[in-house]
View 1 (cartoon, rainbow, N blue to C red):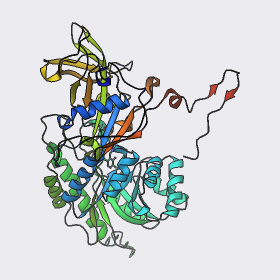
View 2: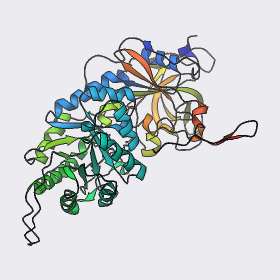
View 3: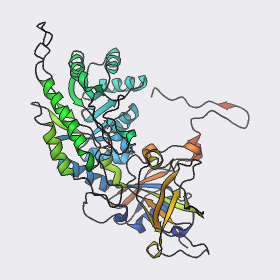
View 4: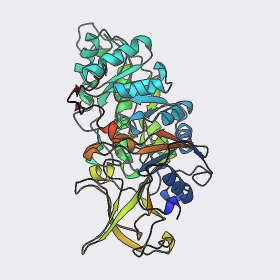
Length: 477
Ligand code: LLP
């Protein structure tokens, strides 16, 4: 029996590099489906590195960057780092020419480490903790081309208190939201951005203290083709706002004190480009979205460019999560397939009821201990795929027809490259999974599997002699 056929994970296998052939069919399709991945290659990766295991294909990341740049040739494209912050991904995105949009000091730090210079760094401050502002203001001293995107007048004041007078972009709440779930529709949520009606005034006031270089809005995440109208509406509002700011105010107050027009560099309409999670869902027509965006924002003020901030689109279909079946339990109501990845590895199904395609790659054993037949020869059976976490919501799918899973089978969970590893946690004291980066056929361990020592690393512990070891204090960040 090969490792691939063995039940459970092979956690003991050495972390390291491995070379093999391509992971998917050649070409640059608009979406990579879970069925496009090479099953043998994935099985080899799982055997070598154990499960749960993320695999992130850098070639696909590059293709996605290229497709975005082709569709938006005249726009600044900024990768929303939060979708996947792995160093190898950040480097691939930087080399592909995209900027980095960061949501925290930590993300700025990681983008800097991956080689993004200040002129390619955009920090979007959402209720920023003091230590994040301290850090970013410090970075801006060395990298004055960095831009801080601000969604509240309070945040502007807090920046000024720290002596910051550099580049600022004003984040606006456009009043129009969109996205795959209510929890990710930012556009209408009061938490984000300065209300549209007050944005022009706030931007003009900000220009007295900072260099205001842009306006920004993000409707939400995972916008599918049906929501294009909301996207268009949001973009058109942003175009109107930018034009208004580029005009002299006309001395509305009548006091002879008309503010100067703002010289905007860009109008950033956020990210949110959806990807087809469902097997039969058509991919987003990026060309059509780009055309609609350009049309809705036009005419841009002289000297201002369009900017976009895709996260998911860059990395989602470049990633797959591999998990091993450890328990098959028939019950009167459903057939429960227990696997070694759960909501701590991939939170999206539990948090948003998100659909991820799942493919049974086989390799397991039947009830009598013999090798189970190839998945193609098995009957499609409705199953619940459940993780090892003590929560009812810890399922990857319910009532999904899969080639009847057997113990030891390897399952590939598709479109897992965005907000997968990033939202992983150590809940239930589960170490986070490993991740391999695939680059031109070579697999490199990008993030090693965590150990229990990692889980307790920040905790105050007592050694056997009774001496207490204080946790190492975190730095300023
Ligand atoms: N720009 C801003 C200001 C954002 O807040 C976001 C996402 C993006 C860009 C990128 O959006 P994308 O192109 O990736 O849709 N955890 C959720 C997604 C949360 C997104 C938050 N903000 C999920 O797994 O669906």
